[in-house]
Image 1 (cartoon, rainbow, N blue to C red):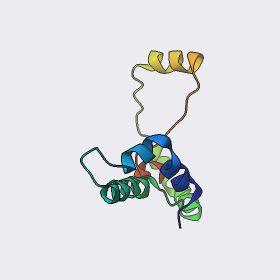
Image 2: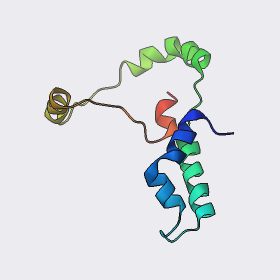
Image 3: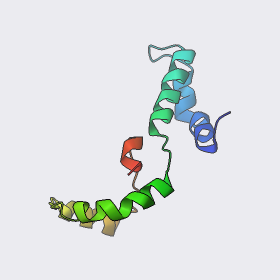
Image 4: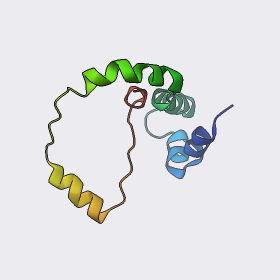
Amino acid sequence: MQDDISQAVMAHEEVLKYLRGGYGESGAQARERIHGYLDELRTTQRHKFYRALQHPLYPILRKIERKHENLHYVTAAVRAHRIVYASNHKSHTDY
């Protein structure tokens, strides 16, 4: 059974067009590829684990030097547009 997000993705017109084939893959191959992408993006949140690591890791992580580059692009985008963070891999959301 698919979750709500997977169902919404699979019902999207662009995805349906891709599933009909014509891009060098059969519908079954395309469906398998899409489900693979969705599985890769899916994250498992482990809040208790993160909370337990917060205190021992904080003294280490706060010492990491941050280098801000090209912030003028970000500032201009925030002023002119709505900004949405979209992780492109589950490992980016897991920490």
